Length: 96
Image (cartoon, rainbow, N blue to C red):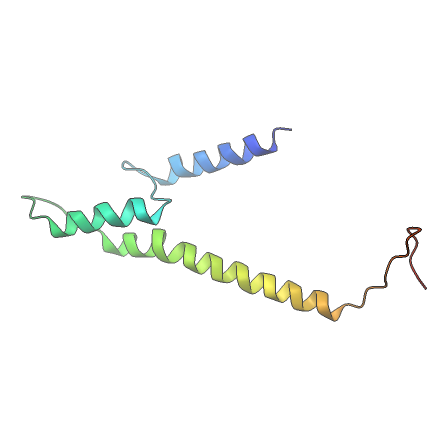
């Protein structure tokens, strides 16, 4: 099955398409470390460290996504607990 290949190519195209010239910072450690060093080092003629992007996308994005996923999981778990499911007998039929 090529499903995993399609998922990998989709992620690769997102990274290439959204990354711009320097690439997408999909890993916060790979983005925040160099950004912080750029902010601290006294380089002549350096531009902005672009903290507005550096804190929102690679840091707060995954945190917000994981919180949303946990809330959805808890909601589905609560719905599952509300539904009464009959036990299945050993023969494979539904116990009445």
